[in-house]
Length: 443
Ligand SMILES: *Cc1c(COP(=O)(O)O)cnc(C)c1O
Image 1: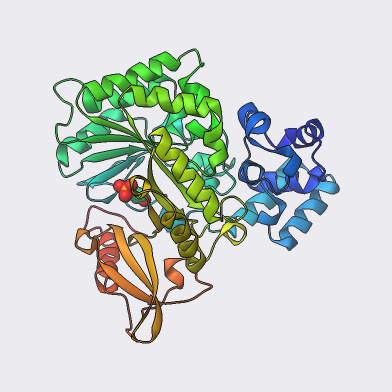
Image 2: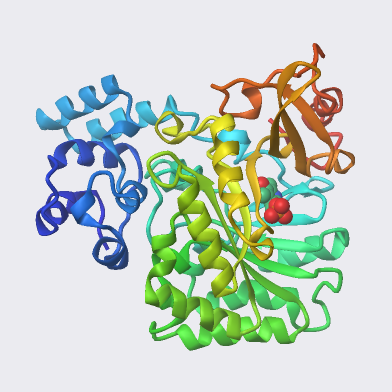
């Protein structure tokens, strides 16, 4: 396991031609965790710093604003104390919207006065669950939208629960929920017996919620640590747990995070995919579109083709959220749509299960489905793929084309309208939540 203190020795070992200091400074502000699989097998060190997996795993100096980088480099060079550097890092983080779309406070389910920590219930049919032992990852992605929770200060505020029975009880009282998504961090850092303690109440025994169809696990482990499903001492136990869930009659599905085809070209990743699929579990592939990592339609076409060949269902291409170093990673919506479309055109129908680019914004998941000329105006055609108000689901709406726009909040309604169709109701939902008149909290 490598963290920021290993940067000089890693650069030396792999003969990286860069000065390590700016990288150490970046890793002081952003979390860093790299393992042998990533450093030794996935990164192409002959191509650093441009190599996409290097960009994905090592915090980059460009993630800091030039003045912040200069201030911190100077402080580190002058031998500032650890506490002083920590304080400086915290000031820089605070300027970077560390909790986008109100990760920490919004959508926390309630029954009466009781709030359910470590759960989010935003879309009617799906509950997110954050098991407390799963709130870190095998390695960290530099662009992670939950980056702040992996810093030393953020970790104390981590959104998490260790109460699997509370999750089951919430599902028993909310039969409209068909789908639970375990997320983190990465739930697949948990050993099988801990994972079992969360999953078992949901599928085994007379009290398991009969209305629940699917248990999903959001995970980067197939890319960052595929040995979890192959040669780790407890790999067999993990796989037999999956098999048990499937045999109970519920669907077990991975939302697997793949950013680049190289992650899946590795033989260990392919063996892991085969072993998981042999248990009857499904795997879907998703990732954000990220400048410096995968902002090229050839990369996505190759990735979706390879996923399809391996039996992974291509699912979402996301838009990078407006948090952290988004100035370094973001791709404007117009360009994102072009990259998506160029890749989508070149794949077989069996791979066209994928949707994107998709923004996980506060009103819902909004897809950019087209850039068109309509009645003489160049517009984005947008569609709700998930919606805070279920009546918005699937609805199409239009925004004036803006080549610079990177997020829903940058967009203006097309055709001279004063607001988007959902805005009056959205304001009402926000107000109801503030007045605590609804079961949701939106801040
Ligand atoms: C993306 C997301 C989900 C899952 O959406 P699917 O379209 O079902 O994959 C659930 N809850 C929240 C808050 C999300 O952002």
